[in-house]
Length: 156
Length: 202
Image (cartoon, rainbow over all chains, first blue to last red; front, top):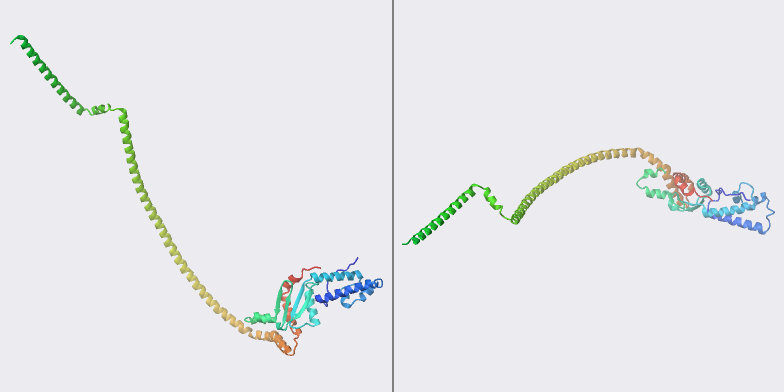
């Protein structure tokens, strides 16, 4: 009986595309393990060790093939049910910036998915779009909406 | 002249005298009877009592009808006159009441207008003075914050804009310069963002 349940998604895995890649990898891994009858060869330690670090980061302890199957199912559920947040920045963020933003949002919901877009015309700041609403926190928006209220604008 | 002839003549004479005496008595009796009638009024009534009850009833009915008609006529005439008089009184009272009410309303309206105008004038004066004061205060605040605003321009907006312009000329924009701006905005909208994304469980 598998004890695995997905509680968090590592911050390095931010968006849907990465989740799909991992699901694809897990699927292939499971098929390969079964078809080549290597299941017996995998001990509790060897299974985790044979995974990429990105996949290993989902697990705290040693894992079994059942855990991997459960992880795959859980990740499929994440894609279907988790809220997807799209963040538009004035440039493509580097790894550090991405991790900070993902970390901030995952503190609110540990399994939300974040997609990044870039649009230089927003000048600065960001635009956040969730399934429900859109928050334009860009500098362009502030400049456009605060032409006659520079004092408030300058409080940014 | 014989005796039998003399006796016959005297008999005729006696008969004539007797007839004359009877006629005179009748005349005298009739005169006396008339005198009695004049002296006694009841005698005439006594005479009328000889009229038949049917005639009396008929006469009474006619008189009664006439009396009723007369009473009705009088009553209607007086009642209509009374009504007319009453109506004219009511009209006059009603008209007076309406006139009084209108006058009272007009006077109250005039008072209200005067009072309102007075209040409006007072409010306008107060607003004018307040506006002048607030303008003064605003200008003072504006002047006092001028340096502060300029320093903020230097510290925040100008930094981002200059960075953007400089880097965009070189084909890149450094997001690290915007980190404070980005995370400050996120914190400001945190509550709304939390509402959007927190309640989803796998």
